[in-house]
Image (cartoon, rainbow, N blue to C red; front, side, top):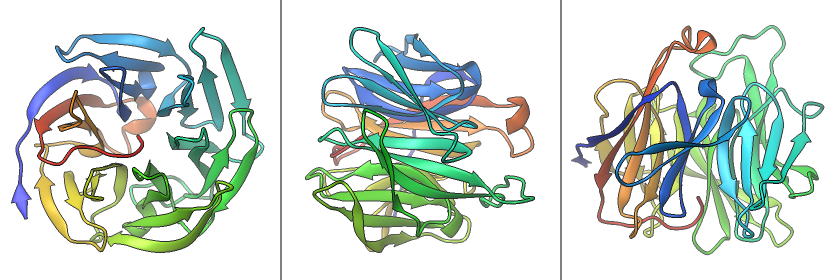
Length: 286
């Protein structure tokens, strides 16, 4: 297993999430700042859109941006003309979190439910979840209930497999995507150790997943089957989410947040993004 080192890319975030490479820039959410942000190769940050506590990001084939909210089950779509459509799913869940928008326009997202009497903790206690698929018109169907707390989501390059982080079970799980967009044939992609707690993830051209293991404060590259090939200790802070981008998709961007479970409700957090060059390019969605 190789250990890799990073360089500092940008600082000054409160709590970064959902990194995505789109239109030659790195996009991400800064939930406590109520902002979707984009940063160019020189590190110049722009607030692209303001919305309440954004979390996950994706783009439909027509260029419409899709944004989920944390602490509220709301999905916002903004088309290329700036028209905003909001789908309120609060009758279905307590919160949304991550999302991935596939090549056919299907939107896969996390739906979270508060457990009775529970308070959220680092192991996912107090919150349970499901994976749903949503149309741009707001029609929602639950497609996976066999996860304890779904988190990061990615779709393979051929569009046939969805890989999800199951934070509460310390594993990555893979599903076949059926023609109608539902998920079937669930299997374990990788078992992580008890400190893994996988968060955001992305896939590369060899079918491996880069995943942030926030509690272990490390990013790892793991093959289908569970073998870890690379490890990146970010030097302090939660390892939240990676993204492969740049002109050749060989720049690995790492979102890191220095915070605690106790500090999150009061936005006691400092976020940053680090980067490094990798040999295997990104593939699939996001």
